Length: 86
View 1 (cartoon, helix red, strand yellow):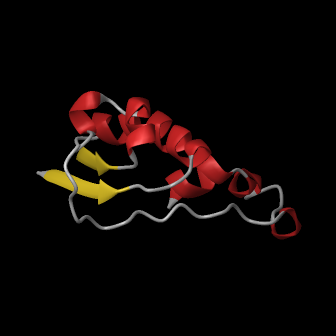
View 2: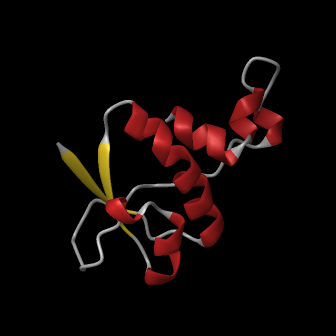
């Protein structure tokens, strides 16, 4: 089953997500992405929808503040790890 998502985020967030996409694919997720034209080159061509589709927007949250982390959750200060853990 294909999952179509909208990912209209900035360059840095798109790079993070593009690097994480193979992790989801290896687990059997078939993801199609609607994104800004200037970000399409970051994603595998077979995943990008070029037509304008209405799709649920994926949130890309900021990591936790340094004051709220400790030795057990220090990875949550990293934006990429914080989002992949969600």
